[in-house]
Length: 335
Image (tube, rainbow, N blue to C red):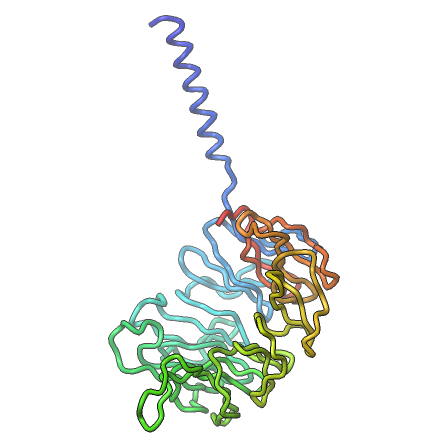
């Protein structure tokens, strides 16, 4: 073999080794919890997923199972559940199997990981205002064989307070909940499949008013965002916002004006035009925000209530709210 061939082969090996080394050392995206300075407080492994902190605990996955950690990153409830939700009012919804499985049942655990309401529902939502929406039947995937779905509300003993009679049962807030009726019937005949079908009920399960909406979100600061603006507890439109967007949080709500995010107060007046294109709701004085439309290029950070960035844009677009002084972010994510 000629010396030139040997040199060429050695050069090829060196080049390949360098490329492989570069691949090996290329950082992998990972989820983390940051503090209000933007510093990482809890770093998860690239294979782990998480949800935001709630009541001092955050759901985190490991090897395909979910458990809960505290603010130090220590496991409080070891990862052994297939499906979980955030803690609310001292309890969390967990599932016995994958969400798409026909045999999966949902129940509620306490902060020790013990079931206090046995998994016997086909779907369940978190407790709020002392009640939780639950469902039996083909609730999660309509194509699955089974009896017709029926939504209702239970208390913390697991007993029904409002019997299962809705097409969907939203969470209670400020003593009100949105329930879904479809299609709209008059004397047993379909009136209009496209007619607004969400209505407000009280804790007795009675309709608050005859007003119907296409969609409605939970109440916050005494108002709920709907397709027609913000309504009060009586079901009356209090702010006829043409582009309602997010619920009120810390006294302000994010709406879209001229293609940009602005914040209004409870009178509908614009109180903040932030130094960014998009922003989410405020939590603990900070709001996730993106300076421009490069949502998928780590262009998100957090603004304060002056509208200026407090934590500079550097994260993936899926940012969590601050809770217990920590927020969930994804570092190095590209999509």
